[in-house]
Image (tube, rainbow, N blue to C red):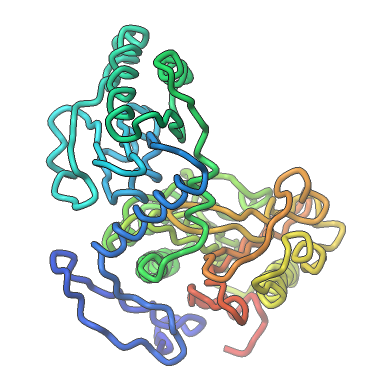
Length: 433
């Protein structure tokens, strides 16, 4: 990346990579020798490999079929999506996947055509439960729903009766049990399956990051005294959409005193000279894959205070240290034990996790601080092929401001390889400009 003449502490944001998704033949582009993460992918291969992984999970867990209600799992298994936000809150669209047999989409009325072109969808029917809750008819639809699934199971699985469900009303599970099926919660099984990324997924994640870095660059260009947090958040959202992304899960963009403690959302507050601006991207990006970085910027004119610089330098050191010590094969406990030690005065406002997984959203694993490990994490091992974000928040109770930083990495055999390349604020790191 080249130095930007109008903003010397930043370099030009990376170019977005365009892909002709209508063609199964994607040109083979070369990557920079310093960035070995693929940026091209075959969409059909991506869908077929993910479905194969789901069916492998079913075999490993002795499931004869799964019913997927979670929109993220539906997309992972088939590539199918529809009115994502609506079905996140209204779990009435479901996909039936037998270990062997046809994959059937139970869809919102009149919208099956948006998914039936997919080679992963063999048939579509209207959802039996789509309007039930709105109309107060939950109990009326239970038996028809369960009878249909039980009939499909008899056809596809014979005597097999074990069906996994990732999320639903408990009354639907009870209805299936009344039809003689054995219902198993398969949400954790799905998340475990998704933890190791395919090469095609890594390419999607790289494309999402490219779009998000451009969006963050748009925010920094717009950051001036008098601009509101909402205006800056709108700039970020606009950049995400223009880069091929889909939506931002959170509104974590705050300025000045709202940066301490963390998790304040963007609002009408307007920036003043000499303040910090902190943001977390939390973006569902290209082809539904996450891009998750955090940056904190100084709003001029003037120079950052010594206190602002000290907060920033600690957060930067925490990211650099934790990324350097994490290696595949290390237990979560070993990573937590070797992690950067937060000074006591900042410990109470620590970010909940040191490292978290990235995929279609924030995923497995979650590695908490040593004192929180048994409560939040448990046992596990960092594995090659995972994608993770390394996080830091440094602020003290009652402090005037705080600093949030985060970078995203691919876990390789030799350690963590950066997927994010957005520069840090050199003014806050006290380096020469």
